[in-house]
Image (tube, rainbow, N blue to C red):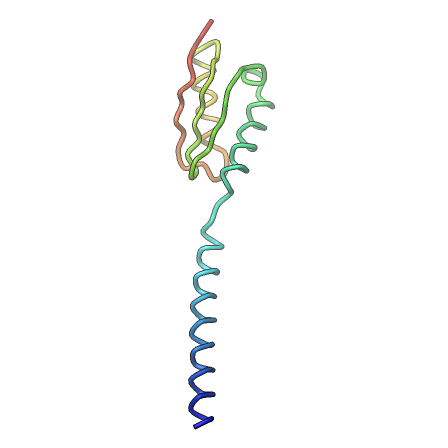
Length: 102
């Protein structure tokens, strides 16, 4: 009887460990940067760009989608901000809500 219980317990533990391993392993390697990391990276990219460093651009990230809001002086700055944000690692899409105000 003890042999069957021990075999069952070992089998159960093995199944649990295999299930946890595959879940953790697959999800761990598929995950990209966190939303906070993406926001920080976009902010750094804007700060180092001469046309965007002085603009008032608010950056939010939700599940890899970067949302840009605030004001810029030209349409070119708005387009540049969207392009730069889209090139940051982990960004899935960019929602550009920047308003051009002279």
